[in-house]
Image (cartoon, rainbow, N blue to C red):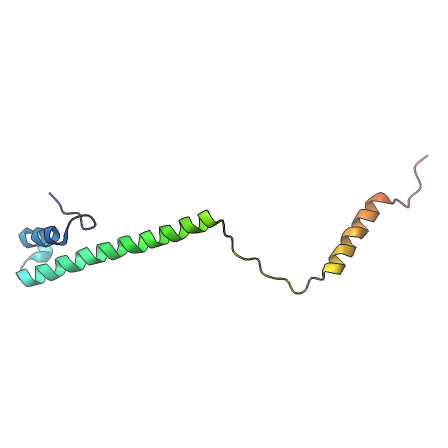
Length: 101
């Protein structure tokens, strides 16, 4: 039965590497196979942790409802913006053209 690097114990992974007849282990000593098993297991755990960390970060962002902060536009003047809105409002109400007869 193949070993699952993410879920199985370190000892199970090492034992599986010892008894494996895969070509990458041909001519490797028991010590070297043990080192390879440990490296493979730790690498799988690191990848699992990194993906978990990224998923947790995204979930926390959704839960908190945080959005990226809008950039402040220093070129806008609140008084000028209000005056523009009033002019548009007045223009809609006042019509200087004579009504059609």
